[in-house]
Length: 377
Image (cartoon, rainbow, N blue to C red; front, side, top):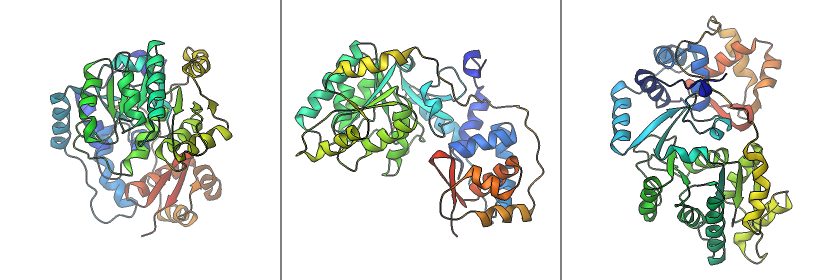
């Protein structure tokens, strides 16, 4: 039985340690997971960080989030009625556990029951047409009436229409910045309505974090992962909505697209999705009929670890020869970790430890699908 089904929860001390570790320099979701696996708990990982960084070849200290930093962020969450949930806890959104490098800790504001509804994402153009906005509102309203939660990104255009139309039934806003930094500014009132009514907002980013352009693809992976299926209403040939659609497809989620006029550039992306196998969507029933059989299907729950005190085999630190062998096999070109293991002929656990050291030292870049590359000095 996995941790979520057991109902295991982090203690306050553990939650602070998780938050400190996740907010420390060069610690992303994948690195966090590897640190827990190697060190056994977030508290032990915080103690080991300086040594791991030194072994990875970095000569200046790494910034480790202080206990005061973590406590201030916890207090900021409490002030705005939000809370943090760890990936092994019962309230962690189930579908989110399955994304590529799921966030170990998320902040949620609003009604957690919305995450128990079958979820559908609706995304599309910020500069949407009146027809696109009307269709998105109809789709969101009717999906809500059918018992689905609507997931979107609080952006202008299609996202806004989808949230507004599903306020009475349940909607989730996935934030690119901290929960206290909603974007765009004109949606602040809508943001408040979502959490006050039947919905919730969710973010993996720190409180006080103002979203930047590169944060939106990270947000899009969460939109895709939170959903059973994703509907693209309007999208230009190069748009964030198509990133969400690609990520949804990689996760095995059903991708739907609304056909549009070939003369409208906002339909070029959706029409291309249809050419590549997306489900044609001309009414809400197209989505409901495709997803209803999936609602009660069992799904693998993905990672379910909880700190602390898990038993892991101890490893002696890698020697310089082994570390140099791995570094020499890597390059700026993304490489699959399995290929690296075969080529190096080192034990997989040793490879993972060396990669963890390089990652913490800022010398490694992680890519989707288990690929990595070396960052040139």
